Image (cartoon, rainbow, N blue to C red):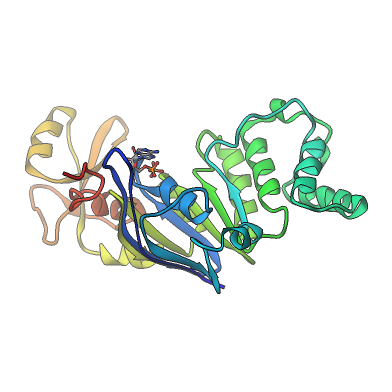
Length: 298
Ligand code: ADP
């Protein structure tokens, strides 16, 4: 089963064009949707999750017309939104059991087994009696995955799931997602390049509502081979370098700024060739101004 998005567009009532003819084919596995804040990621996720309407274009999940057959899509879909609502004082077990009941899993025994199995899968079984309101950020996100997996979805959408997680929690969450991604289409929407680099076999960069890149992370890095240059400078040189070069990123290394630029031929001036990484690709793909999207229509 594949998710196929064709020419999807959406302009909000205030004139912001959040999606501009987005076309993507998303196979089984982990797919990273990478873009800065305001790129249109949530709009795309919510549209695929049948929570909002597009103006034009089509989305198909296998044989299902996502924009029309909403009920059918919802049966195939698990969704972990950016803000997973309020966390009540009830226990993880009780809430998951309740959500399973809402999903229509009526038979008590079957439901209880499923709840145990899902909590086990996300490594929360030992915490099942604790109130979710007292969970850490990482535990809440893992609970979010457990609820999204109720009903055995074919498509799982997770929107900015690692924001606010510490490195250990993020790692546990990565491991869980990549396990899920072995059998299901998982779309991971994020502005964190590392999320995509560590997890995703396929990805897209979206900016100003437009797809700027679609393919594998490795191919994206390959595209920029020989075109990334770095230089270590003094802090007071930063301004003059900003005027002269299109700087992709600046990092402090031992207190000195190291700048990276994108140029098809060597800039000279003390720059040395650098191995491109996904961050370079991301920043170079979103560096040029959007053609027309993300701005207010006339
Ligand atoms: P992302 O998830 O990548 O941060 P969004 O899809 O939330 O991006 O937003 C894309 C653009 O659409 C932004 O410019 C945002 O301000 C705008 N936008 C999002 N939701 C609405 C809305 N309900 N009404 C008007 N503009 C919106």
